[in-house]
Image (cartoon, rainbow, N blue to C red):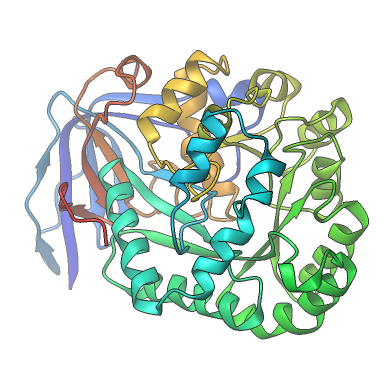
Length: 422
């Protein structure tokens, strides 16, 4: 029997479509005042004016209580399309060193960096990793996130990468009210046991990890960067991943202008992420493609780096998404409210562009825009009901959560706002 409910007395604000919005179109949102949303099972059956709304069906349905959203804006649920969700250990001491002026190499020489998280993750119990990731997902849900990407990449060995992806799979099938998308990122760094032999490690990923982990992840990512996985190594690895049916994402042009964005476009990637140092050729390539430019302002903020050129990308016609990059090293944050403020204040994005970037374009960066990312008939009823009638409050309330209710697949999510960190 169909489960049916209505969200009444609301204002709908949403991008529209089943693909990423590019350039100026990112600022074009549909606004419907005095609106209703009807939900049949998990999907939207009607979204429009209350006056034109059809009557609720009388037979063959289980009627659930209405949600009265009087005085509230309803947005699509937020899509966090770039996180490193599952990891062991913390790196607060390393963060303190950075605040005191230590360079990345000084931190590495003191035992910090990605390898320190790899060591902690390899030694962590399965249950501890799962519990901590679940805690973070619950906190994300309270901020209106209904879809999150979770990368592996702190294992850097077949067994530990498998463990991380199995945990992500368990999170996907658990009762957590969120869509969790698994990304395999064994190419996050060259592990210490390879003594800097990138080619040998890429050989191992291609021969062993890609085929053996394919059933656990639909997406493959690589850290394309000078001194890590440079262009030819990235092309070889990601071409092999594509041949096995993986969709592709790239960490691109984060530290240097290397051409990662161009490579992402060449291989038809879902997204090129970071882009703090994307060059003119990369901007042009992204603008002429369907590859989404995913920008991560919380990371730039935490590292005190210049922000990615959002305005230049949008004005050139690219599709821009925003995501948190939650990770234990460079960005221990998934604060959507702070991300929104940074994007508006320091990246010169309008709030309309930010909403598109955090919803429809984020969904496109995961290959999910046909099913989520906007409030339209047929899509999943993934929604963020704000405690305000004005979307301009989102950047104005700096770092303050304005989401009152998160709706995932048609169900209002009850979130414990005071859980204990495992």
